[in-house]
Length: 141
Image 1 (cartoon, one colour):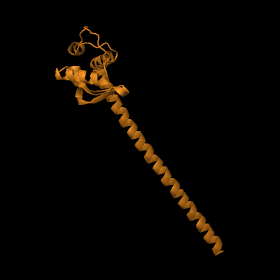
Image 2: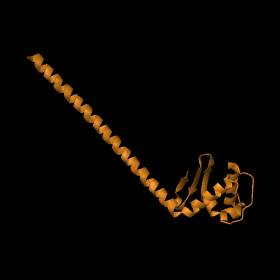
Image 3: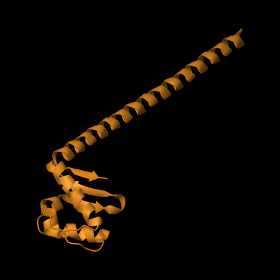
Image 4: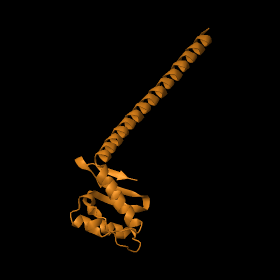
């Protein structure tokens, strides 16, 4: 009789341990799920904010993209006129990425508002990083 009682106690304890382990695993899954949801919500809010800034500054963003694209497409205009929106274009040889970066730096030196909003160029990955209103940094890919 005591063997049966010990066996029943063992099975009951074993079942309780398995249940406890299952509850722990479930709690860990819930915590992980909550953390992922929180991270997703934060990323979503950050992306929403970036989209709003791009929308509010779309003319400046579009202009910066057009200038860099035209420089890379051999349709480069003179540095001041290009950033200021002039239609004057002079034919140049193909510009390299460092040439485009220098062009932006020269425009920054002349206090061009579009050029000064450009933080960095990573043309090898089609990326322009701009500082838009409210001090936010936005990447264009």
